[in-house]
Image (tube, rainbow, N blue to C red; front, side, top):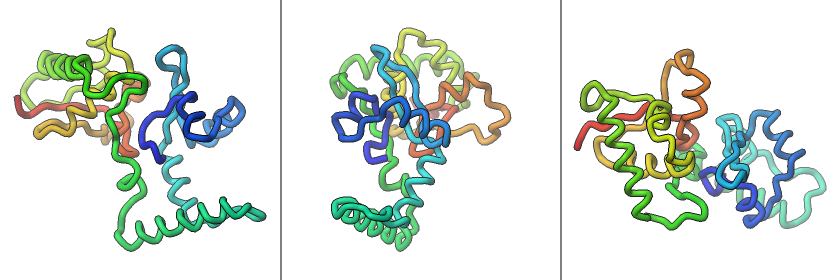
Length: 200
């Protein structure tokens, strides 16, 4: 939640908690996280919609019984965040969920990332029947098989901040195939399956 992006198991260990296999399986069984295998076979984890909802509820839950003082202090801070969200009518992901186009262990704003973004746009233009038409993210990924999952996510999240570029969910979830779901790019708490460019 705090990192607001996919986090690898090694990165989680740097941040503090160690997500071991039993813990990962428990969170997955409860539908709170999703995990995938990425570069160098590292596992990458992200919150599901249910996971974001659990975090939002936990802001107001109060510390567990017999919590030590540091935990009680943490929950006091969480409760203050919850009060602020209620007062301003914000949702949790509006504070923490802004996607950050970060690829772990890769230099930021590299020429490689810029090149991937240009390739995504060029591929979009080859697939779209007209400017501004929606194209499946899954189709874009399939057309760029040499681009890694995280690299693609980082590049398309940079693109979606540009004027005239859209990255949106498929409202009719019944139309989504397993490939569509796997290819989705998460923006905030929303898996996004469709991409469009209205301007050159």
